[in-house]
Length: 369
Image (cartoon, rainbow, N blue to C red; front, side, top):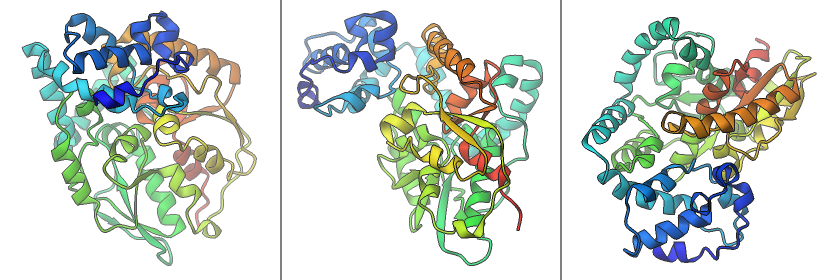
């Protein structure tokens, strides 16, 4: 990792792309500043004390810096390299609370039991109710969902730990679209959390990785509906964002869509744009709907502030970034905002924005045959 850090030449091209640097203006809160801190820590020249942790932890891990870096420095890998030692130096209560949260995420059956409590909680916590989509039926039971008509392929569907209890609507939309095109969908019961939050908290991901790789082996393709999960899994598993897969899929001659005379503003999640490099796919997908006006949301290069659990640990910075995003939402005057990441969707909904996944919009307009 020291050699990777040394590849940064401190050119400063990352500074305009970094949300925290733009808000604070502190070199220590810029990508090159954090790389300098990480380099010093790895060489034993800088202690991983409270000040060090503050600057590292304030990073959103949006990876916008990687998109503009001429040397293609692996900033995210450097960031993850210091997460574990940082976690080891945290207090007992912090470690214990992380352990409980991550254990919950790693066990889907526990999460599904939690889903019932979530339904009750949204009735008494207005902010939580605002963050979640309109209630829909739970994702259907089963592991194999046959294609409609002649099968043209077998695709694995990654559910995700948060989406399976908070965004079943999108998962069902993905299933419906894949089946309609001619794909049999496999939903392995053995799949588990993608491990993104484990990485953020410096915890070991290896057991989760092995479980997911094993669960999805032997399939033609694997798709995910939440770009952050897909980006994390993509380091270990040949998985694709659902919109990206559908745009290149076969079987479009088998489907037809009802017109939608509305403006759809597309929000590009950082994980879709900077990690997966698949930001064009939702636009191409939504333009298959007759009459739909599809336009980018302004400021798409800047993070919305959700960033996994970041909005919980750093609410002041997260809200400042979300304020910027809300100005762009107001300016575009669209009927709905389409985003491909469940965390971004929850963040935008918390401010009263109507948000849907691109695939959910597409599936809603799908004509029955």
